[in-house]
Length: 442
Figure 1 (cartoon, rainbow, N blue to C red):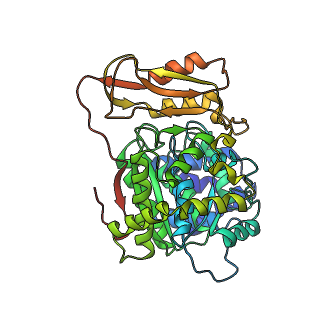
Figure 2 (tube, rainbow, N blue to C red):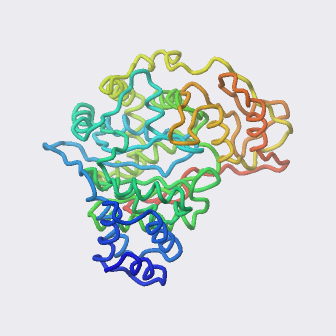
């Protein structure tokens, strides 16, 4: 068997055998073939795809390329691994962790740092003073048993094959291959013990997936993978044509999570979090419908039980939980400017990717993996799609550190808005729900 023959076979759109897939992946992880051959193989997959059998073989190989996390003792929790494909202002995971815990739903998950125009859960939580993530699977399980919440960053020992291949995809224009995205995401879900997986697939201008058709294709692939590995699966296709919530930036998003857990915050974000939790409750117990699930969420928020779970989580991870009662301790920048509307009308479009890039340039994100981020900077939105705005009215509040490019960044943010004369309908966050028995609702 030769690597070049396997590349040629996929180039010519033939189905690969399990032996062939194992052979080329083993050769690559053992550094027995050069990057240029794997690059050619990835490009062949990009153009010709993989069928369900090939995807399952790839995923299994990725999963078993490193450590697998296993529970060492019996637990009472129903564990759900929630994952988002990444969006601007997406702090949903952080809000869900304590809400899930207060409802007897455990979380074990791996999360990433932000790169480019989307933020990362790891960075947001690390904006809390002294907050430290586990470094090993043993530490992860210890945190889980303490709080019902286990979360840490990716390590070299977990799915190392994905790390090596993703780095190559990133520089060979093959990141957007739907089968490779699905294998990458699901392999990192399947090394973690869980009863079910809920995937939030962002679709729109501020997402990596730009249209709902591709979102549905990716959803179908990932649901099929999960079911092959005996996982309960639900995917949510959600709107990323505008930022999620009203605050973007690491400490600012923690502030908004605290607002949500206090029963405040943006109505659209609160509804999304309620809907998401109702789906999780239904996954745990199919007899509980949306209305009853919604009431359960309202109860744990109104009673402050979810907020108490957030405090408990922060304390367990070494962070300063006094931020819950004293937001000033988050260290959000006191240097602020406003961006004002330059015309009167209705907000029709927001270039969300441009907003995300602007926040990155303020210092809240990374352009390269080695960049250092500033937790204190970001944006607050006052107007979203469908809202009426008068000329001279506030569109944004900019939290900055006297960035030398500030005026250009502000202009880019202003130009991300399209304001028109005619009334515009607000868009729902949830576009479609797939998998499971949950009935979509308005």
